Image (cartoon, rainbow, N blue to C red; front, side):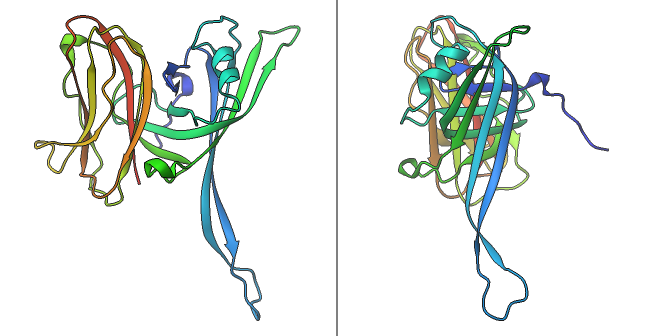
Length: 252
């Protein structure tokens, strides 16, 4: 029997912000260009795949607060930016092992709608981009959530539940982290680890340590074999506070 999933639990992260409280629709688009290889004598056209691309589109509610993290503030600020914002769409909500879409993207359009008989709304469109400088050669990548996105107290940090891919993969992976809330009074180290047997673990991706009380986002990629199991482990030098972070990984 099919397993259908309601969209109400979806979550969207943009750089160091959780945008889920402002948004109510997301469209993820995948595209594959082709190049024609038709030759003389052929009765029909022939093609081969070339470059892949991806798009992300969001719709939601307009929020006019001037502080960082609101829908209007962030979507307007990054339009035309050359920093390629980092995006994660947790399609099935904040559950370890559920699907996530990760991307580095350029915002191509931002629209504010003010209907006379309804609430003000916004839409934002993104064109996903590869990042050769960081060995990331994809537009939009399908992966898995490795955290729930919930707040974790400093004393409860450690190894989280693992995700079974059923087999290892050979072409590397990318990891993406968003930290929208952080009150820990010391640096926090967050890593993605991999294992062949769900018992012996090795570091796969080590993100730059998150500074005391800092909010941030990072993407990092590795080449080569990625073992069957993945998990996140976190530790901190802090003695108080809590941290909220979403980590996802996509195998190439």
